[in-house]
Length: 195
Image 1 (cartoon, helix red, strand yellow):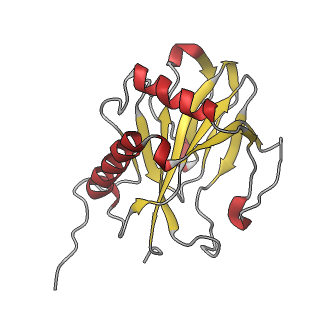
Image 2: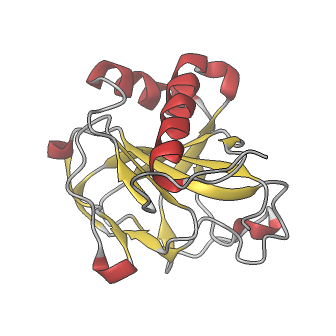
């Protein structure tokens, strides 16, 4: 019988020490996002349809196919697996959904929400880890902070190309952008139901 050990530094939020992507690579991801069909983001996607609600979310998104940027996906998956081993300790983690390129214009935001369906009935695999990678240079926008409801936690300002991984059941939001455009890559990783 193999014993599964808890991670040494158990937490539900972890920021990469260094950027995962260079400014040039971030621009390549932005270009890849712009090459895909843009759509207004919806809320309540548990039924796979969702609905538009500008009181809860104002942002434009597009989906980057796996085959479009395989090296980017490999870098992200490897980083997620190391982060999971060192911080979360969730079982059976894998890359399950394509990356969502997001653009928050001035006034854009996403109100408090969780990334996992609380009933876990609409997911073939359960979202356990979420990731946000900042693609914009922080000098290009103001506002748009990623905030967590847990004691008002707000990660330190991310650098361009740096990512934060967090448990998908944590309530979080993107505060309104006050100036410029905030661009990010959002991803989710799943596995069997939590035990």
